[in-house]
Every structure is written in C-alpha cells, then in structure tokens.
Length: 112
Image (cartoon, rainbow, N blue to C red; front, side, top):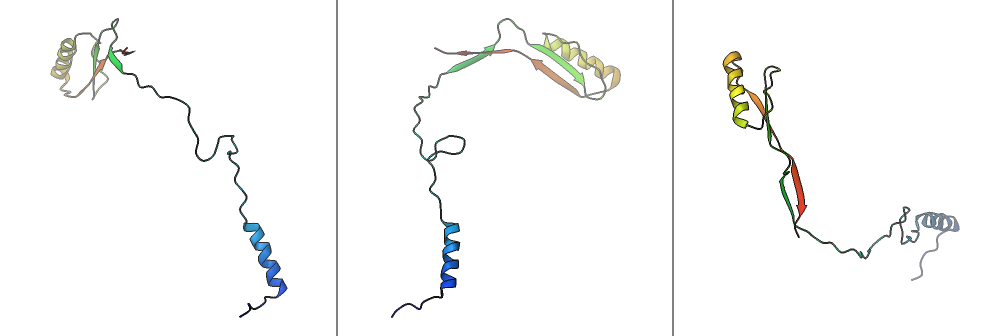
C-alpha cells in the first residue's frame, strides 16, 4: 500500500526543523586545545618512600593559655614547667580550662 502523500508545506517545515537539529561532527580537540576522548599518557609514575622526623636543630616548645581570661604560660621546652604554671593559675583564679600547645618542626627526607 503506498504511503499517503503530505502536502508540500508540511514537508518543507519538517526539513527545516531537521536541519536545525542535525549534529555537527565533533572535533578531536576541545576549544582549549586538549584532546577529546581517549588520550595515551606517556608519563611514568614513580613512588618513593619518605620519612618524617623532628628537625634536628629545634626543640619542642610547650605553651598554654587560659580559656576564661587572657592569661598565658611562659613558653618552655619543659612541658612539666608549663603544667605547674597552669596549676598555679587555677589555684589563684579558679579557672580550670586551658589550651595546651605543643610546637615542633619536622623534616621530610626521601629514603634511598
């Protein structure tokens, strides 16, 4: 059975719509110049073991500050001395909370 024929007005409108929908062929590169799709990498990754240690020329520094007032303990390389200062401050003021800081410097070296 033959297909019914459309009038020419419908056919031309249909073609015009299809032409606007046609896909353009994608270029192999993005606008920024990078390749699209599968890209072969030519780099080799090398994993190296590292070790982190305390810097040999520095000491650990201990500090403390009160959470209720502006009081701060004198920074020291002896943690016990800072703790004694905190206990003395609590005895004088009744402030029980402190922020303790321990600062050290590190050195990272690659193991061969």
